[in-house]
Image (cartoon, rainbow, N blue to C red; front, side, top):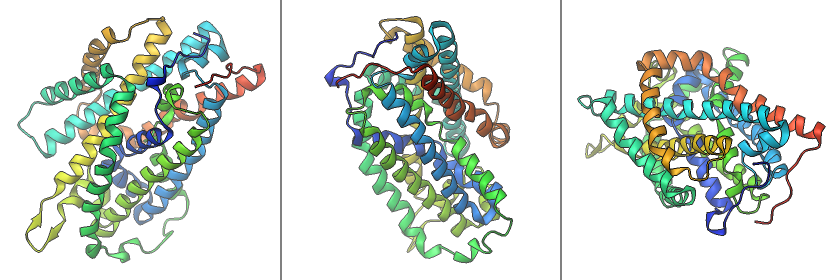
Length: 372
């Protein structure tokens, strides 16, 4: 477990593919709920809060890159043991695994409640979640490289669909909705930026570093992924404020979905919110798959299990059950996430990774360089 993970040539992805994964991961659930969360804190300055949040994610990525390069060839689970020793390392890794698994379950709840409340009201949420979980199971059993290639194939469509969504809204932009700037000071903007940062949970990606070709590519991969994903979320936030206004954006559970409903071109192109749904389903599929797979890899490496595939279906079933337990209704989870999720996720996205890096410096621990 302390050695470098064995990575075959066919299991390696390029840094551009890694950047695509980061883009999908950033968009995830955020494209639907980020404008509301930011407007709740920063009002019409939500766009500034979004920029602050993107900057915070960029700074945090430096920590992840340093860890990834210092422990090249090892997953998060493996270098927890390298740094902290066998038992304490396993305990810290287990905490990460529980966080990843909870995150995957909450996102499954996001998917179920959005679709059943906005689109398919007569469909039982359990049915929808089971069908989606089956797709996630198929993706994980197919392997990391397979669903990464699928993400790369879908990526151009993500950009095209996003442009088709935003461009028709430009004539409806009301720039007065952004005034006055800094009306409530800097603190609400910083709180909004912190809320944005808390929705990204990029420590999940620490489990997949050994599968990226050339560890130096992590830097450019993170820069490109955070850049593209951040631009998409920034434009979505700006569009929500410019078209809907601060008050409506704050009061809507899914303001981006409401924004898409406002598209109307010559009375022949209307009701194109399906475009947004397509973008969101693609991105949340990649994020749930990555997060679920990260928790699976963590369990396998903690228990030293050679074959992960027999665990995929039982863990997927548990994910559905946990999502139903943790997600009683949209109002409850929205209130909980708004107040508690960002500080809670900070433990796993910053404090624990920083602790691992600091301890590795003091103990002078690092992995043996691996030629990929």
